[in-house]
Length: 478
Ligand code: ZN
Image (tube, rainbow, N blue to C red):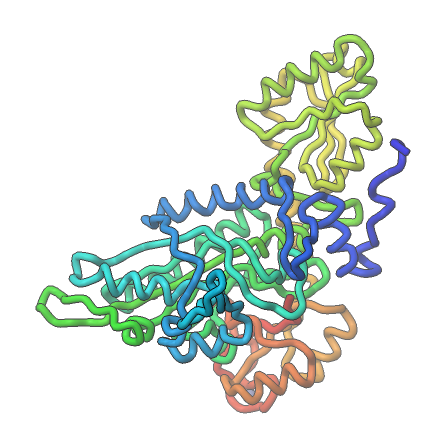
């Protein structure tokens, strides 16, 4: 059985992308299902990816002046109801605690779906003067949203995330913060996860419950569906008014401050899988791969092979995340196992390599083999990891460009999707919600965002023919 390849068991991504996805999350040992529907165990290999994302992002948050805090996980119903739009947006998917032991709670408690209300209550308590501003807070926690249909990482009832909640003296400062964090998320996706993103603003109908404006980064998955990878919201002073947060300014006037919130979730792991994965399994970007290179000994029973492999591992480990697999599985088994797990680089070392003072490096994303002298390995590995990152990014960008269609009528949208498959549709829009709904109904794509960069290519709305106000990216979304 040891020779049986693990990859025989995964569905081809071209045949059934959804099945391929669920096969990968299981076979690569990222998650396991539990007895609670929509709640998963994130296994060590999956959690290690999250920890790496967390480390990178947390560093970026600290570098931009943010501090971590921790709010409680329960929100009293009376508190949740203070901001009308917010409660309306979240009520359908809230889980409630109604009993404490054997006692029925007077004010039932919601398990946080997001923590704006808790932050607001806290800010009302600690902010009094302009000297108390700004507060740049973030927390790393899990939240609960009672979704009807669930999929590992993409949509689960409990998920891990970070939520930033900041409060500022002026609207300008808060808007600047909203944009800054959108850029931080884009930086993470593009320069660490190798996922190209479109930065944009959500339309009115698609913005966060209680926000003045919502910004998002949108990525295109391998199958041509869009995935919202992160959001950043500007709240104006709406929450501050609802929660009676005020500060005294330098002129001794009482003023409501301005707020933001922003978040990314374990959904990013889903984005990595669906952007980079292939028919042999997961393909991980080096910056977040739990193992950046795996050393696989060839003919490891031969004298000196394991010793040399261990020596190389030791040497590389000061700079990289390295694993040496000295288990008694066959080399072929190991090859497919680490292909399935998406390890960016494989280092093969057998008796003849050792004798010649070399090894073979194989890069996961393109299967390219390179013979490398052992005393150059440390330097070459760094180049290879960079090559993998660039290779993944460029491939994802190519896929997105190939699947981005500029259309001037709804018929053209239908035609483009039929001809070339799902993807981003770029089309002009008058700003009318009716047209936004009509495009969705007629063509199946919904508005993803109004891009911050990008040029108008037509003067009229794709739907009604009236003067166009915005360029919009449309797509089918996860
Ligand atoms: Zn229109």
